[in-house]
Image (cartoon, rainbow, N blue to C red):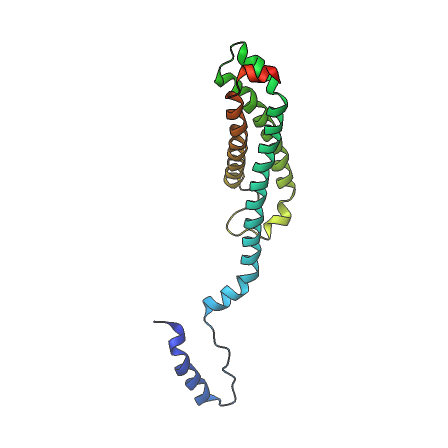
Length: 168
């Protein structure tokens, strides 16, 4: 049974005891709990939205840096391809650099996040600020985004025509 369906009966019972008692703001415990948590819920949603935007911007930034690096190294990649480097080696050459930068970024990021745990503890419910599972999951997601952002320019680098690259 819905608790608020008893509202008229409760008001009648209260007024039968004391007619001057105010009965205007009747809420269930769940409604009171929801109202008290609304501010924290908004903070958590905003934090999630900003984190998603940051992840997207990080992926775009990594993609841009690696694409620029590939464009600058087109001549070198063409020479390597002309000398017999296969697609796997060329892709590994590009991916290695991007993954190294991503690993350095992850180490700096995890170190920074461990330093900011006191600030974040007030926003977390049911998870510790230094939860190893959460830290690992976030690091894996960031690493996957970095590898994906590096993969696209690396794949394009493997398709460079050696003759065209040597003319540049």
